[in-house]
Length: 342
Image 1 (cartoon, rainbow, N blue to C red):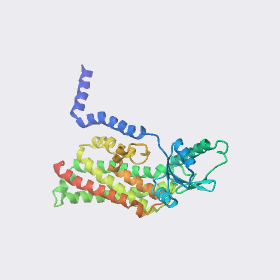
Image 2 (cartoon, rainbow, N blue to C red):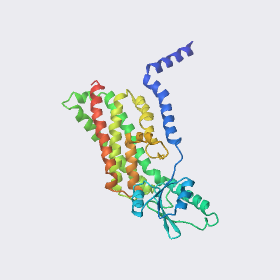
Image 3 (tube, rainbow, N blue to C red):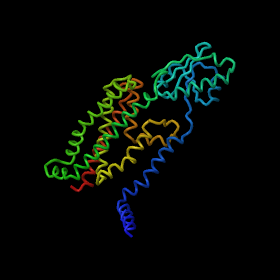
Image 4 (cartoon, rainbow, N blue to C red):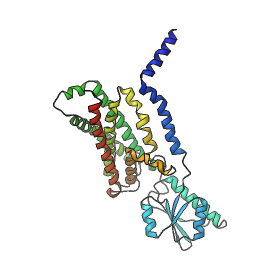
């Protein structure tokens, strides 16, 4: 009877805490759904640009599984620079020249494998002797996989820790009664939110700087572009996480409930941040990534660190990340007014 009483008490506790119950039931299914979207996509099809390539070789490349489009040399270079092609194949007399986009080692290998397969199909006897001259627009043949997903990891760790710490810290400010005392002063709600964002922002800036420095200087992560742009993006990403963390804390009553939001807020961003290739996902599902701050942060960091991009390539990511921060701050002020009865 005593054991039965304990079981009944625990069951009642779960049914009274609807948030925990829903997290236990919904979060695993949501994560599995995200994984199925990312990993159950179609097989990746390398995209090649062909410049002065004979029609029979283009046909063999297509039969081998490539998506081949004919371009002029200038058009092909532009498409390659905008990452719309994985490589450009050009014939210099009888010798093929293959220029790879180079930022993703797995795509480089896929293009080279496909080219060898097409040559063996076209001329089995001479395929081994016909090796293309290979050049890399970005990176090199020695580029490691960590160089490719390292920039995404920098963005993820900055975002994750800032989100968690800011959410829990702001929650303690509320549950500890500090906010009540602040509201007893002439301070307005928006001033409180801005003050907390700036206060926490100093530490998040320090954290973002330390992570970026450690990854590039100590771990030797590929760094082609400006380190200052890396700092700018990590700082904007940290501010977006900071404002989102304080917003989400409005819907949590304790630290345990704040941690429960991680599967709903953080985990989906991992799958759609670019850490895994989204090219195999259906076009109508890729828009999900555009709703997440980490997607833009990871995109900008990759462009800077691997492709050496400047302001002309990252300005849109900067604007979007700034907009996310402003929207989250406005929502935080609204949530502070409607949900926090102080």
